[in-house]
Image (tube, helix red, strand yellow):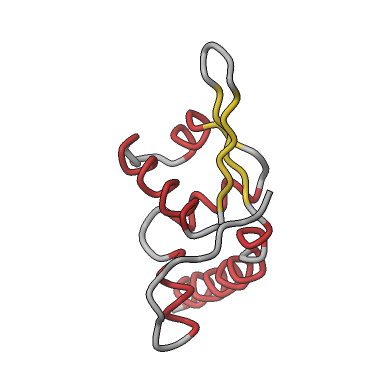
Length: 113
């Protein structure tokens, strides 16, 4: 299966491009869950405290459109849908790992002040 090409307006800088794809309150948290492996919609919904079903659906659709999430639909009753990261989505892991490390340093500094 081919990953869809990222279809966003040309940004003025690469950082802006990245933020257009993973920006917002929920996308990074969805990525965090998908880095752990394939997830069904209900698993994601339970893991993300405070997100509505409508918002989760919207965010997953955007991430799928941007080529970072793959949606697999199984033809069975009841319907089964699984979400996973595409290779492009997996390539975001080092970026989020760096954000995690930076956040740890900031929290440590704040507790020292």
